[in-house]
Amino acid sequence: MAVAEGVPLLMRLVSASVSVSYRAAKIARDVLISGDLGIVEKSGKNDLQTQADRSVQRCIVASLHKQFPNIPIFGEEELAPTTKIPDEFIELKLDEEVLRHKCPDNLKDIKNEEIVIWVDPLDGTKEFTEGFLDHVTVLIGIAVRGVATAGIINQPFCNYEAKPKYGESRCIWGVLGLGSFGFERNTHLEGNIITTTRSHSDYTITKTVQACEPTEVLRVGGAGHKVLLLIEKKAHAYVFASIGCKKWDTCAPEAILHSLGGNLTDIHGKPIPYHANVVHKNTGGVLATVENHDWYVNQIRDKVDAETLSKFETVKLAPPTLESQLSQKTLNIGSNASNATPAGDSTNGKASGSASSEELRMSRKRPFEDSDSKL
Ligand code: AMP
Ligand code: MG
Ligand code: MG
Image (cartoon, rainbow, N blue to C red; front, top):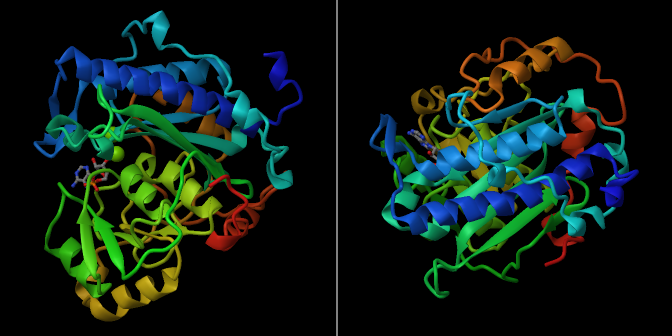
């Protein structure tokens, strides 16, 4: 632990999250190898939970809560809080590679009460059950004052078709103002390749994708996986005109994409807030791009009919009070935050401390090409 002395809270949290993501990936791999996925239908046959979703969430939430007890954590799965968590699910190590990076100045003094963690223990569960293993990711998103600020995407079965024993785990992480690490990207990509859902499609989604004039459509699973395609320059845009994605699906991918100068918003081009009291569904849909974000926003606005567009509501910012964050924390550790209140009208109070939400948003405007990331 001495290695982390003097390291700002945010970087310690990112470091702990990278470490726990590898433990989580190992748990997901072990569930697959056991041959018993323990599949449960949640709202229907396209909304599944497996033993990997349950165990990974327990691992991540318990490990992070032990180290950062005053930070609220929202996990996707509704789990019984009384279940005993095995010792081997607890990972308390810090990732030393992360600690070698300097925290951006505007994030050095961020405090517990300014942070919310959004956990999708397994993104792409449907694909996990069908054997599309590289669509599966573990997502840990870190929001500061409601802005997706740092993200961890662990891909437990990377390259599973080429490598024996279901491939291997890799971790991509990033922080706004610092960059993102752990991946390689193509130098050039022709055409206008759009990625969208594989298992939750409908007429509106297809119509909106077509409005963006794709030269090719990649229908693949997982929000994390689709954003990986963007940062690796295998696709230009992720278009999802649906309210199916939740905050835990987009927080980590958004932070990583933004740290590279890309963008992730709702389909109207408006930012997605991640405060503790925000509504969980991304009611405005999702639009993510490597570059030329406004072009896609304009195509959708001009080519999709107004009645369809009116179904997608931009979520208003509603910064929580410290009291509401702390009460959310006690209610939601280890379980789904089903009692979180939807965002109401904006009460966008004056932020105190080192970085306002607006400054955080501005710090993601660096062009993709200027990233100082290790590529
Ligand atoms: P997809 O692109 O379909 O893999 O979806 C990305 C993420 O959003 C996954 O975690 C899905 O479970 C979730 N999601 C998207 N649409 C729906 C839906 N209609 N019902 C439940 N979850 C959804
Ligand atoms: Mg998900
Ligand atoms: Mg999930």
